[in-house]
Length: 344
Ligand code: ADP
Ligand code: MG
Image (cartoon, rainbow, N blue to C red; front, side, top):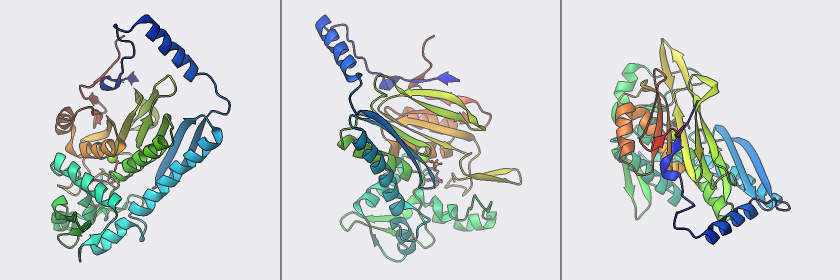
């Protein structure tokens, strides 16, 4: 296993120009902040929400408040699930899918902004990330091992196109330009939920936390003096990890072909769909993105999975403060220039 350093996130505390007394002051401060405080606690909570495993770990000077805040994080995940689940008829997302082909649908500010972000990533990736993938994506059932026939895919391919989403910012509405368009936020909603949870914790004064929803995590601060370690698992062995990322104040998302899939006729059908073909790409096994916020890392991990190794890494190198670790179909690992193995 290798440990990769994320160079752009390493802060330099001791500048050579610092006066000795300043250094002593910082050391005393560090010691004090690490002293045990009455009632202070690390609290951990897990839950199954949004069809995935949710976990929160946080530190707070007051144990009771820590417990409450961890519960608030889980509640925030439920709130997003109620808004954005494609499996709930009453969700805002389902309402859009039912009505937007007929007339513009009024939507919440939060939904409007997230749809705008999704379109931003569509433009950035020249259509690799596209929430209208669901026009065909909804025909796959990974649990029941069902996939649409090729002829069906071809007849529906023109319904996948983010340009079919018509927005009116003054009225705050969205409409679908043609019939048959469907949207799904599975490639960005968990990141959005994680960011919402971290904002909630920040507002409450929490300085050290890790929030995870499936493959999307965000870290607030450090682990009180040490970095958090986020592991990237071996895409073909769920019990082994291939990379450790020491991180603080960062978001990290992994998309893999092993999350939701079935095999039939030698083909691996998984939950990431290329908008060009209506099928799952097979060039990569997993993509991990490291960045500042989880909405971005979530969207980009799905995006790179579709773009493939060369185009994907080229895109990452154009973005500031974003890095990628990619495992290709032969199991070989590739990573962007901002990541480095620590000097021996
Ligand atoms: P996970 O849901 O396992 O965390 P990802 O972040 O990679 O994994 O998201 C996969 C989800 O993204 C799929 O389940 C689906 O809802 C959605 N998705 C699939 N293909 C696309 C695409 N081309 N553009 C946008 N979203 C997609
Ligand atoms: Mg994603």
